[in-house]
Amino acid sequence: MNMAFTRIQWPERVLAGDVVKVRLLVQHPMDTGYLQDLLGKLVPRNVIQSLTCTWGQQVVFRVEPSSGISANPLFEFFVRAEQTAEMHVEWTDDRGVKGSLRQILPVLPKSSP
Figure 1 (cartoon, rainbow, N blue to C red):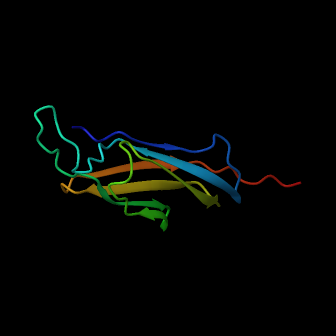
Figure 2 (cartoon, rainbow, N blue to C red):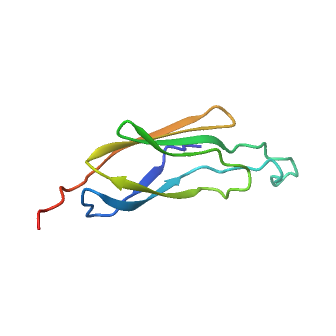
């Protein structure tokens, strides 16, 4: 399965100093190891072991999900946007498959009153 689909959602207009919600969607089956296929054979466990989001040089979100997370997990977290920077997402699953995404998140300078 191609698990390259990862998407970051960020507000369209962000001013320096704003606290904004980041939404991260990762396409992954998150197989628990308890489900059976059509022949009755257990589908092996395969969940994301770790996921890290770095914005600029700072880790802003880190999670070690469990098998209790549904397929194609959606993560939400908040960051204080000071300046335009690259969001770098990296994850690894039980099979050792790694995924990553790099996206520039633009921040507009705060206008003077």
